Length: 212
Image 1 (cartoon, rainbow, N blue to C red):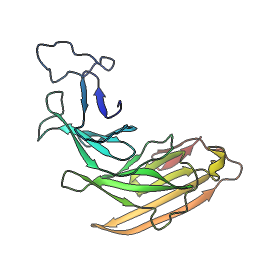
Image 2: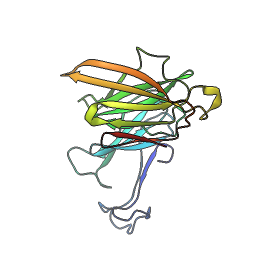
Image 3: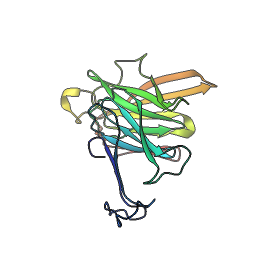
């Protein structure tokens, strides 16, 4: 992404950003399109979701897909504003996907919040703050996140002291959620402190959590 533009290479040619012909627009041609949104947006993250791409900016979110029921391509691409959510955060970590929901971090003062973000069936996306009941729990800047969809658990790597930046990364926060139909029956947070640890990254492999 460049500013509010979605820029994609030619299909199958990962390093070509230029059209191979100007006499017709091929379905495989590179894509460089912007939303018709009137505001100013600087897209920070591009994430594959379903059959499109979700573009996340600090105060607005876009979704790029094929128009109507058509396949995604240079001739059919469309961009819609799907929400106007504040997601400002300082993080080296991208949002994580678990099931049909994406989890987007945001900054709440000296703490980290987390939105559950998913389509609402009307062409837009809805969100729920899953840290609303623990607003001052996950400390400092977010360093990394990992999700284990099989167990409905997300692990968040925070920092003990926001003034130390990424130095005190020895606390892991877990979020466990369970749904019955459309009703959430569990939204449990826990914290684990690893003494003298300096954790840099998290990753789930099978049912095991690895960290560096």
